[in-house]
Length: 520
Image 1 (cartoon, helix red, strand yellow):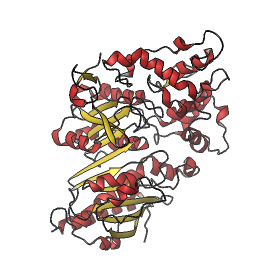
Image 2 (cartoon, rainbow, N blue to C red):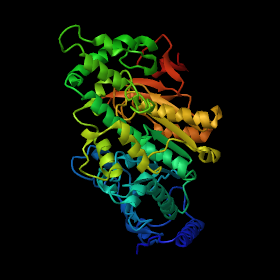
Image 3 (tube, rainbow, N blue to C red):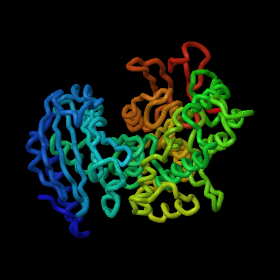
Image 4 (cartoon, rainbow, N blue to C red):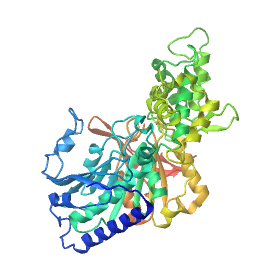
């Protein structure tokens, strides 16, 4: 039967009971390496506080039924090894319904746990993201964060669900997953990792800050930091671009701007390859494309020049002139501008103001006023979705390792927001934590978590494993770009402050011909 927390005393008793149960399970362990100590179906009879286990069943190799129809990951599902699948619901409050799944290899477990994060508003278990860890021998877990559907509507009138989404669900999933893994194998995971991008990157950093004991290594990609400022910036920039017919930049002109940027800046890194290794070196002025006469397909109107400049710049408060949100777009990202400069603001931003800020589904984004609406957004947030002051010292003091990455081509979340976060940690905790406890890798030419003309495929789990095992961040991470299924370029990703620099000989599409050198 499902149990719910109703008092501090009950929570303390539940925690004590939970710890005792795990201790007993692990003490009875006599299993061989990587082999189950308890039959999978027997896990369904276990009892955990505030938790209902709906099913525990062995899944034969290649027999996992792909969720939905036409799933692009169907080939990966067909390649899955035999595993134990546990589905449960966790309810830490009376309004919490956190669905969780834990997958554990039937054989060949590497004695490690790799939890995966979500994207957007979450609202579903990330089955596709669980396939790679399982095939690599990890036990893995995912959660829907306490609601169904990729919409912010769940938060309207449900503060506990918002708390679950913001941070509690990932932690509750992690505690349960470790316990069920221990029960199945008869031994707890030796090491635990978390990997996530976008919302998953936010979840990763939140875990490090709020629950420093949960994971030894954490990978945070393109984290959605300063959530309310980000959403305010997304709406504000959209209104700037659409303030008049003259100011709107049609997508047909994006290549014109992009080509001009490459012409001005592509060779600054020593290689003309269609990718800017360090966009911060590029000081392209869109005014150079302003039409001398009437509007045309290969030039920008005066209003379009102003819009392009706004996209390249930070969002500032009209009241104080202070920066609200850092530079939205980096030079080189022009082909992806429709994300925020399209006909309407990004849906996540609209819904954040409708359901969380003003609690009015009929709120109209057209009446957004940066002079007042940002203050309203920050006033309703209690640190759930926004955190601007990292307190990672407890995590680092425990020996935790944090690997952060972000694509320079990202047009959904500002790459500079992640750079600023990293620099704030360096400033707060000192240079000694860089490379020892945390490292940032900016990915040239990569879009939001993936895609783009850059090298967007790399072994994130292998990198954090290396970081944890050696106590020092990788000096480089080899990344690749694929066209179809063919790898046509490799390049090293460098610790922030260094860039991949061509040695001067050999193919510029091979990582071996580059070295990570200090940026100029």
